Length: 70
Image (cartoon, rainbow, N blue to C red):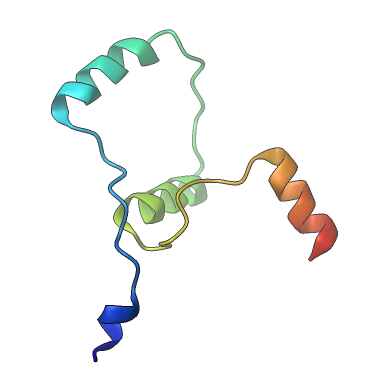
């Protein structure tokens, strides 16, 4: 048994080319945010499986729960 057999599969967080085109049109109507270099690194880690099995960021309520109970 190798150590790799214990790893969870890396979730696919990228979208297809067709979906990306639709999302770009929809995104034109959304509020934009400038990301800090740290936030960009976190996003890259989410997308390339570097922090698998995490699939996203905590909501504010989840974050506050972690801060209060850990």
